[in-house]
Amino acid sequence: MRQADEPKSAGAVLGWLVLSALAPGSAHLRAGWRRTGLVLLSCYAALLLALLAFILSNDLGTLAGSATQDSWLTAIMAGGIVLGLAWFALIVHSFVVLRPGRLAQSGQALTGTVAGLLAIAVVVPFGYAAQSAGTSRQTLDRIFTAPENEGEPPPPEPEPEDPWAGRERVNILLLGGDADDNRTGVRTDSMNLASVDVKTGNTVLFSLPRNLEDVRFRPDTPMARRFPGGFDLPKDANGGSSDLLNSVWEYADAHPEIFGGKQHQGPKVLMDTIGYTLGIEVDWYALVNMWGFARLIDAIGGVRISVEQDVVFGKYNEGLVKAGTRRLKGADAMWYARSRTNSDDYTRMRRQRCVLGALLDQADPATVLTRFNQIALATKELIRTDIPRPMLRHLVPLALKVKDAEVSSVQFVPPLINTGYPDWDKIRDIAEKALRASSRAQAPVAASASPAATPTSTPSPRKTPKKPQAKDGQDPAQGLTEGCGGSSAKG
Image 1 (cartoon, rainbow, N blue to C red):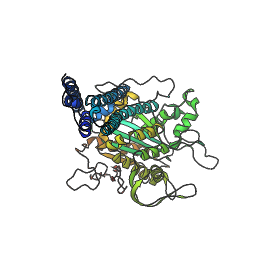
Image 2: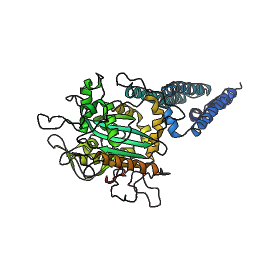
Image 3: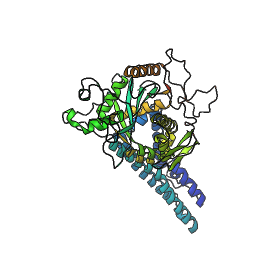
Image 4: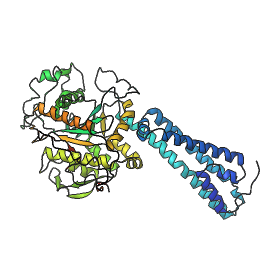
């Protein structure tokens, strides 16, 4: 090793130190440590090339899906810690080989202080990566727990060659529950079934009203034997009904004797009931706590929504979400979606659809990455689901497909459906037509990032597609944010 002509000024020392943080080995080469410098630079170049090759050989969806696995999260945590310590040591050793002791006392103080700050600064991104991986692991472990249905074996691991087991569509029941310490049981006030084409990501969102009456159960099931003529219970003491669709989960949970003593049958029964109603096999469910959802909206910085008219809320009508287009915080967005004051269930369902559409449009990957920890902490209290943890590896890439695919919505509300006397055959027929149309549609090559796209731009999939009216006049499918004004605008 030959001693070189070291930098003779504080500025030169700091310049080489910063360069060494970006290109390890630079300071060692300058100081005459050629062998060490070349080894460091070679290792760094090899690491960058390997990382580049890995990224180019995998798409974003595959990488994001793999990052939900425990093995990957553990590797990211360990890698972040090791690389952080290595970069810290690199800065310290680079500073030493530059021999700042030859500088004047003021130069030594300056370079020493900056070197210390730089050594700490280079650790921060690696520490953040390790912490994010740990937070992800804790969040996923909390949300994706073992099945709660008694006597049922754990689901089998998905086959890598066909994780969907031959399914052309994946059907996930999205439920909104209003948890409250003063309430017992689970009441699902918002019920939407998302049917996703596994090849294109094209999605149909079926919205079912909470007050759907005379609910029918699949033949030869315990609930069908208990209610052969449909879900029917005596009126409450105050004249209210407890036999609407939003009470199925709660009733099943409260009557384990119907299921031979098995507990926690509510999710399974509601999935089967809605699947039978639509003529669709439901794969999994996800129950969202509505106020946890508000915290999620806050975590992404709010959602921009066009409120078409003032929405009053609160026990004494003391709250108000004013009309206009602006970014709403979580609480206001939830009140906008949930308030029934001076309104009805069907208007509320439309507003809920608008909030879902705005969230889907605006929760882009960049926002998720920059606010990752806030989102993860909010999600811990948000979701209850039976989706198997191993399926996340495949569902995450599918979710990214949905982001750029055609998303349509069907709401089974009056006048399309009479909720007091539902036409079950008509409901199944409408669902079947919507699914056929979704499967035929081609996913767009690119989605517009703004609703103000020029006529030559590819239209946003969230906008209502122009399509011919069905011959029978019954084509209720619409764009997810149709009728929502500028709800999908970004700002």
